[in-house]
Image 1: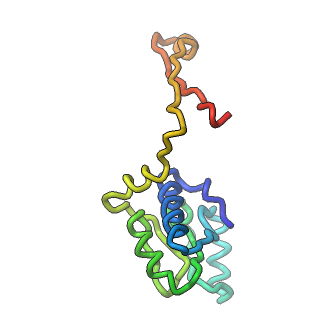
Image 2: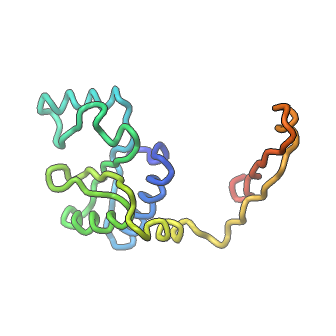
Image 3: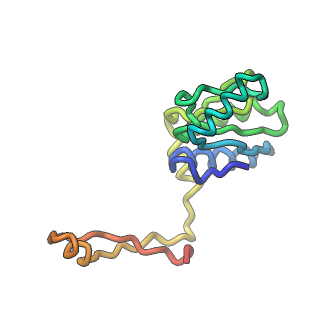
Length: 157
């Protein structure tokens, strides 16, 4: 399983919300690839050119995986893939189609996706972080303003 924490925050939150909805529908998903380095992309592309990969691979510098804007995800059962892609489009993901069944690109999200993501992450049990003003930063930098620091909420300690 790939590390989704490497993805940009908006992509990660949309992916989590999407997978949560799929899970509620009884569709299982496993993320197999997220962010890739250029070196890893080059290696995968080399294997693709040799015919050693099951799925297509973009040339280095042309893959959305290099910027964290794409994920490879296996969906079970396989016949639920079109439905999963339809649900994913509500969270800003576009399916690559039948030639690359595991690839989903993160495109600009459609209207309402942020509301759906916010709904998934909202919890009344979690207190709002406390903002603390500190003069130390201002004096250290030689300026006469204060910098705000966010205190760690109790549930994170």
